[in-house]
Image 1 (cartoon, rainbow, N blue to C red):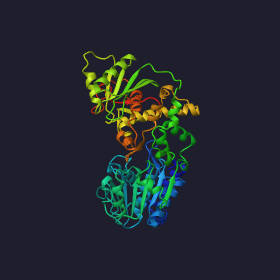
Image 2: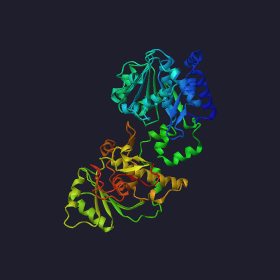
Image 3: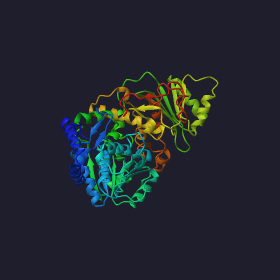
Image 4: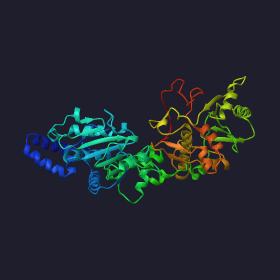
Amino acid sequence: MIAPTPDILTYRYELHAKLANDPDGQALARARWADDCAAWVRECLWTFDPRESPAFLPFAPFPRQQEYLDWITERFDNAEQGIAEKTRDMGLTYCACAWALHRWLYFDGFKATFVSRKLELVDRIGDMDTIFEKLRFMRGKIPEYLLPRGFDPRVHDGRGKLINPENGSSITGEGGANAGRGGRSSIYFIDEAAYLDHPDKVEPAISANSDCRIYISTPNGPDRLFYSKRHSGKFSVFTFHWRDDPRKSEDWYTRKKDEMDPVDFAREVEIDYSESQEDTLIPMRWVRAAVGLDLPPGPEIVCGLDVAELGSSKNAIAVCRSPVVVSLDRWSGMNTTQTAHRAKEITEGVRASQLRFDATGIGAGVRGTLESLEEDPTFEVVPIYAGASPSPVYYDNKAAKDKFTNLRAEMWWELRRRFQRTWEHVEGGVKHDPSDMISIPNRENLIQQLTQPKFRFTEGGKIRLESKDQMRTRGISSPDEGDALAMGMTSAFSGWGSADVAFGGEVSGGGADRLTAGGDFW
């Protein structure tokens, strides 16, 4: 949508003021609008954007949006599927709603169904981010003389359902596992299709109910129904890139690139499938750039301990003065009691303020030993639970729990961002705060381990780190030094004691309402 001009507002006001008391003019206008969806949208519909002032805007589709409306019509007329890939925030959902509302108003027996991964994303009263609230807003702004005869919102507008009593047309909404259970439809719109939770269940159901299906989404990595359809070569693809939007400029692009995580930026702005398919968490070139880098060490010393599992893995401890990794040590052949005492000796020897370790599984033995010492150690004992929920930290106004599947993924992702900033600084001269980068010793085992874990995006768009068991199926042992480093370097626990970071349960401790990460994490 383009910001309204006085000409647009004046034209609309004069047009509908004239038609309000002119039945013959209304009939002519209806006939014209029935044949021209874009004209009807341009002259009759409104949108809502709380970021604008005023928030209520005439729906003035720009050229690429008009092409999208025509593209939907072509898919519908040919009874075929279509793939709409997009930069985020391009107005495609509003366009799809407008197209469906046009058919609902002017064509007998039409039925459109909107699908999303949860019904709450399709319809929730009062939430303008949902599809049906957009439909209701647009329907509520249509001139009264255009509404269907007999239409009563109390009767014909329910949750996930909009009925035209005059011509029998309807618009319905479905979500999650219930998608496809609402019977046959003239057309299906699958919104954010790459993020469906169960595409293997949704696709057969909706395939049986309609030949025309429009899949709309930003990329979300490989192994997705949307990805396979997009690259199959079997379906018409409509690409809606940010450069097609007259509201977005090079300054906007540069600002987003600076603000966003590179993988999110690649997916949501550049529609870059190659980047979103990248499954190596930390590329080797990033790690090499950090070896021996001259950075000022921070004032606080923290130790991260990875406790050895059964088999060939070893215990590892990383001594960190963020952003500098001071040293690493590994050992085997010790039980958890011996490991706890050795870790205590190292931590006290370097005068560290904290010893962080994964207390899950075998690590519980280390916790038990440290908590039963006759004399309190000189450092904080910080047991963490890497497989539990992410930290309470917010990154760019988004909770960690909405970005990561667990705490281990969050810690490793922060490592990734440190190495990426370091590489950008070393190779490209990009200025980053030294505290947001990293310097590591020239230790080949560590270098190799840091590049071994892979990651992927879940159906809901969260970041999932490859588990140690999954790595073993590829013949790769546990990245003990890497895990120790991730625990020692993460900023998620800064200023938090052991009671505060027991993320396996409720967050405790004062000031736990909201922590905000520093730097340009996202």
